[in-house]
Image (cartoon, rainbow, N blue to C red; front, side, top):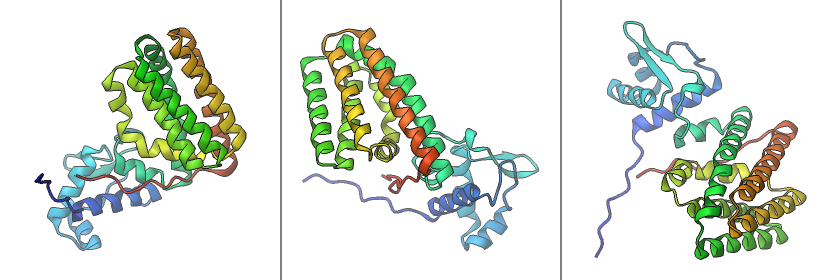
Length: 253
């Protein structure tokens, strides 16, 4: 019988990290301001100073705060925070302003990476890769016809994951692994409009055709156009309605 370790419960230090990040994002502790000293934080949150010390250590690791010798603990601007940390992503996505900023920058990063990836996929794809890409595209069409936005979004991401798999570089896939939940939420927010889904399906089909024919330049051009259309749609959502993302709690061992 297989034996698995018991799930690790969230400790007080983890909870304090989340409370402090939320307070910072609310503006209670602006960038470059000094956090209250350990004893004051312990009193405010009714935890031990050891718990506060552990939480501050974790915040330093995530780039949220810095220690200035002899002066105290200071808040860093969000641009210095760890960009792939699930806890920080969840917290920043909780506000309309933070969610919109994350969505725009994530799409920008995807465009920079996935255009090149599609070219590699056109050079390295196998017959099985083409099967997986075709299946994902079929699922996109079926979900869109049902007006199933969640199903469409899931199939959309599966298509892009299949392109990365076809490129044959595990480091690229690993780069996006921490962002799976955020990617899903951003794509879902931009996929509620049926004409937009039709445009996306047509763009994915062109990417697949270029990869199938083994033409890297055509694959890069098709992916570049698709990512440009995606960016334009996300900007519309952000500017017209704002964007609020509902990320699940961060995954823990």
